[in-house]
Image 1 (cartoon, protein in one colour):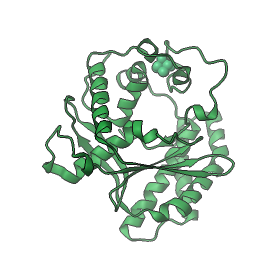
Image 2 (tube, protein in one colour):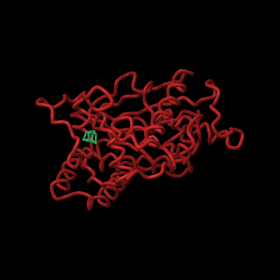
Image 3 (tube, helix red, strand yellow):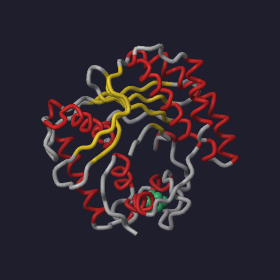
Image 4 (cartoon, rainbow, N blue to C red):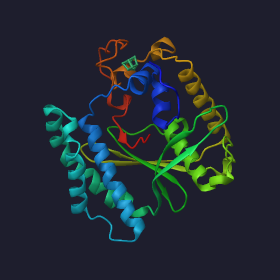
Length: 289
Ligand code: SF4
């Protein structure tokens, strides 16, 4: 069953681009798959970071590490019911890593950021697409940079932000928030007014590493974005939910890392050699709808 398209989000756009059938299972069939322990850890770290910036913006005492560990524990414990016994055991193995990630972030990254907006909902329109694009901007600093943070098992490619839909959507979303009624629906911003973006990545490993990517968009990035979102919207409208390998060159990694690979009848057979660590990020962060 195809449901009417009422809105798009960075998640739904990315899902359709990865595999239209994945979009169908998630947004039409609404199949729920259990979260992984790593995903729950990423969400719990995100909860701590959000609370830290809210306190910092309000001018009160910011979270110290011990309190932050308690917040992490509470956030993790509140989601344990989503896991089976093996998953819960895995969370216990990951809890120490969570403390390390939080401590690293609060000591090395957060003190240098002055928050302006936190978890702000946006909605805007682009030419050719008759539904709004919606989401939440994680964080905007007082210099007007849109910031996202993720945890990952490997560093991101240096050119990641040039192709990423999520942060460009956040940048357009924050721009729409700034302009309010002064921006006509469907009107694209002047490129030199589009807020810059930044991605902070905590790379998990024996030692935690920090990767920072900064990017400013050019006209071509916005034009490509408009084309991509129009293609996604047209595919959903025409109920084209073929698995990705029927519409482009197959890549076994896509099925290996798909949340639905246990239930999908179109799944490609697993690769004989599992992909290397750098092949795809086990990443966690906000991906608000
Ligand atoms: S398992 Fe493969 S074909 Fe099936 S939804 Fe996921 S990515 Fe698409």
